[in-house]
Structures are given as C-alpha cells and as structure tokens.
Length: 178
Image 1 (cartoon, rainbow, N blue to C red):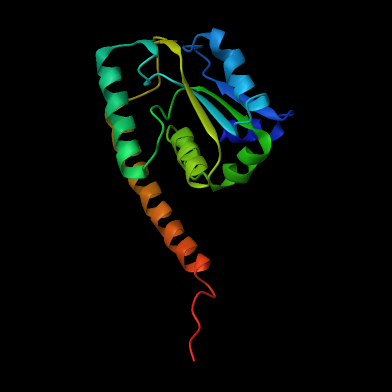
Image 2 (cartoon, rainbow, N blue to C red; image 1 turned 90 degrees about the horizontal axis):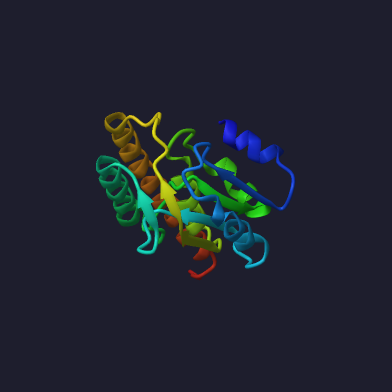
C-alpha cells in the first residue's frame, strides 16, 4: 500500500496524513501535530462524529458513515467516534510497531490501525473538526459497505484469537500440578 510505504520512508518523530481533498479544515493542523509532539499521545485523529464537530456532507454519506462507525464501536469495542477521518498523526515508534500487523490495504486500513492501537494500549486523542464534503469521490457505497462489513468481522475474529492467546500466555505458570 502506498500510504504504508510513504510512512515508512518519512523522517521525523511525528508522522501525519491528510486526505488530498483537504476536507478537514487546516486550522486543526496545529492541534493534530501538538497532540503527539506536546501532549504525549501516540495517535491523534480528527473526528467528524463528535457532538462538537461541524460537518457538511450529503445525507446518504452521513447516514452510511454514522452506521459504519456505530458497527465498529459495537463489534470491535472501539471507543472512537470516527475511524476514517483522513486527518491523522502518529508518533513514529508506536506506528511502526503496528503498521505491519494491519492486513487491509484499502478503505479499512485506518479503522484497523486505530482499533489495533486501542487493543495494544496506545494513547489516542480524538478531537472534533470542521469538515466539508470534497465532491468527487472514489467511494462506491454498495461495494464498500459490503467490503468493510466483511473486514469488521475479519478483524473481530483476529482480535478474539489474540485475546485468547494473551489469556493463555498471561496464565503460563499460574498453576502447579503434581
């Protein structure tokens, strides 16, 4: 995936990516970067779903996005409101711990990254943003909803397997049998 390669070749301790359509108001850039560099978060993300967010987009996209994020919160036990806002920053070392464990190479990439970051115990800041729909998009709602739904369940199974492995590993040496 091009984003993975770009992040791996980037220099600096704080890495970020911003959607090319600049839908998120750039007045939030300072907060995004300072969340990592000054406040000590490992990951930071803008949110279009928080009550204080100011978002303008077509109703169909709004409903799909809210439904998607609701499903991620329910099935993947995420605490985030918005998993796919294209306005994220990362502390380099924690990102590099996770980046190769992310299996998806398309639209689910950032959801998977942020859910894994939570499950690994990284410190995440989510903050409301001003966001305006950028017009043309490569998103195909019908196709992408099905694809993302299957990715939610793939990640859920993966997290359940990891949880079982952690439980067994943490219990090694807990019992003594004669």
